Amino acid sequence: MNTTVLRPVLAILVAVVVAVTAGCSSNGPTLTISDPHVKAMPAGEMSAAFATLANTTGDDIDIIGARSEAAETVELHEMVMDGPAMTMSAVEKIVVPAGGTIVLEPGGLHIMLIGLSADLEPGDDIEITLVLSDGEEISFTAVVRDMPNAQESYHS
Image (cartoon, rainbow, N blue to C red):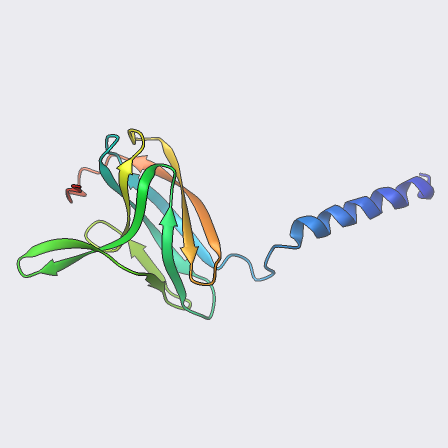
């Protein structure tokens, strides 16, 4: 093969690889998201997103917000006991401890989707973006599920 043709091609390939990887961290992802899912609900109602979040770093990760085109408003929430009843309230942040894991689940921490823009039918996928305190944003796809055991009622 003619090396005078090969050298410019290799130079272009190296430039493309450098450009594509320039924004990538050599340490890999900071937050691993597994089993992301959302409760099926009709348009205009509220729903919630759940997942397991694993912090692969040596520092705590603070999730300070979230957004999705599937809802008018997206908030970080928790369910807590208030006397004999469970109450839901917004939280300023969700902390994923260094090297640790937290579970977003019914009856606990979750991502609240308020004012759904369309019906969330089982099998649908929705995009959610988490906003971290350091400015990093992590997007993921959550599958919509029928969740008969998640009996929280989400009312506006």
